[in-house]
Every structure is written in structure tokens, then in C-alpha cells.
Length: 366
Ligand code: GDP
Image (tube, rainbow, N blue to C red; front, side):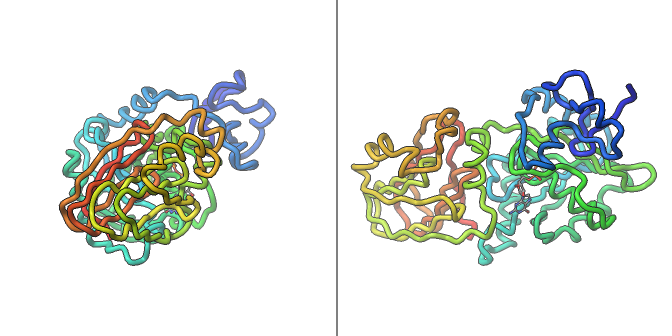
């Protein structure tokens, strides 16, 4: 059989093992656009199958580009910077120029200061040891910022290949589809979905006679909460429109639950407001700190949901971290879920999150 790549994800097509990646029935080989079973199901039934590559395989595949010349475009999810910034990027891709792209900017409230956000991203990359040539904020879904970015890519790439790199679920496929659409007016080419790990193989889109835009497989980052929730819950926690901040006036010794996926205890400090930036679909529940443990024990998956039953099977237990905030305006970030902005000084809080999905703090973005 000649080598055929899936038109959706780029994986090598095979017709012998229905359970392995790249399977398609022999009868489908006659079709013009051949899709693997996984992409076929996704396209026609909006249903995703499990990823069968291990993290190691992902890494190995992506590190194939180490020796090549080219420009790296690292796409991250602006809503989950900690979970999607690949700290080992320079090690994986070698000494190539890197453009950092913060995607899903449409999710942030309109009041977000883009210039500040851009600077913060640049600083975060630097802190992680990633030297970036430029930083862009875009929305692949709405098309914001795409033109400026593609213009800059053309300038920097100097007639070499462009590698699009990112962890799963940052919107890499949506971004590439957008570029293709812009360039050719052509519809959907690469599979896009809610679910992490959709883009399995390398896919090449010719830029000119000699060079291509290359979509690399998504790297799985265990710190992304997306890996610990069911498909149904992922739809709930992933915002799909602009986040409406929810403001809570709390006294010390009060607790907020975000479904049953995160918990925030206001331990010490004066009465003040806490601004919560989470998907509008995640219910927030306020209670007294003294009742919080019991509520969690008896109501997780019930009143405190998501997690749904399915998620409860895979979700790690909470771990907690305590922060004392002395600066003005700090964000407590629950990666992939959202963040809480604290405006007061001298505040002590405890954040609870599923193990591995580590909570962090930063200077307020908004
Ligand atoms: P990939 O795994 O990185 O290729 O990610 P996909 O392109 O499959 O996108 C993952 C999810 O993020 C899908 O539900 C997309 O609709 C969504 N998404 C991608 N780009 C954007 C964006 O700019 N804004 C918003 N709100 N959602 C996006």
C-alpha cells in the first residue's frame, strides 16, 4: 500500500488494525479526502477517540525538528499560560527563532490591558528560559490579530519552514485552519475539537515552492486540568465566550468553591472584594470556612459540580497551597480553570486544586 496521510491529522493511514492510530476501512481508500477513523468520527459525529500516543512519543516526534532550520511559532492558551507554556521548548526545538502566540484572547474581558498582558507574557517566557523574538495576542476563532501575526511570520521566517508548536488544546488546529482559510479561502482542513490530543501527526501546508507550515503533534502537559476531566466537563470549564467577572465580598474565614474543581479559602485580612474570572458555566458556591471540608466531602459531584461522575473516576485529590499577599492586585491562578484577583494588601489565602494542577500567583492582569 502506498503511503497515505490522513487529511485531518496527518497520521499515516493503515487498514489492518481498527484499534491502532490511522485506521481506515479499505473501502474508504477510494475517497478523495481520506480520513483516519478518529478524524472521521470527529468530523461527522463530533466525537473523539482516545489518544494512543504516549507523552514520550509526542516528545520524540516533536524533537524531530531539532536539527532543521526554521521559525517556531509557539501557541499557548491565554487562559492557561502556566499549563501551556512549554518550558523545555528551547531544548526540544533547538536554536530557532521563536514567536510566542497567546491564543483565545476573545475569552478575556474587554477591559483587559493588552499591552500589559503582552509584556507579562514576554516576562513569563523569559523567566521560563525561553527567548522570544516577538509576542502576539490572537483569537483563532474570531480572527483577531491573525493578519499582523502572519505578516510578522513572513518577515522573520526568511524563506524557511514554520513549525507550529503547542500543548494539546491550545487551539493550534483552529489557528492553522484560520491561516489556510485566509490564504486560500478554503474551508476546514485540519481537525479541530474540544478535546486534547486531537492533532496526532505532522501535517504540512505548502507556503511556497520550497517551504511549508508544519503542524506538530500536541505535547501533553500533565499539569493541564483538561487531562483530568471528562469531555462533558471540559465543555463546561472551557469558556466559549467572553468571561463575565463575578465579584464576591468576603469576610475572612469564608470559602468559595468553583464547582468541586477548585476551592479558595480567605483565611486572614479585612473584608474585601474578590473578582473571579472563570467560565460563566462554572457555578461558584460560597460557604463558611468551618463548613467547607464537610461540604466538599458530602457534596462533591452533587451541589459542587462539575466534577461529573465520570470525572470523579480520574480526578486527583486536592492539594492545598497557602499564600500571603502583600502586593496590591494579585491574581491567584488555577491553571485551565481561571483566576481570582485580590485587590487588598496583607491577605492570607489558601487555594485547593487537583494534585499536579498547581496553583500560582502573578501580578494582576486586569
Ligand atoms: P489543538 O489541540 O491545539 O489543535 O486545539 P483545537 O484547535 O482543537 O482547539 C481546542 C479548543 O479550543 C476547541 O474547542 C476550539 O474551538 C477552542 N479554541 C481554539 N481557538 C480558540 C480561540 O481563539 N478562542 C476560543 N474561545 N476558543 C478557541
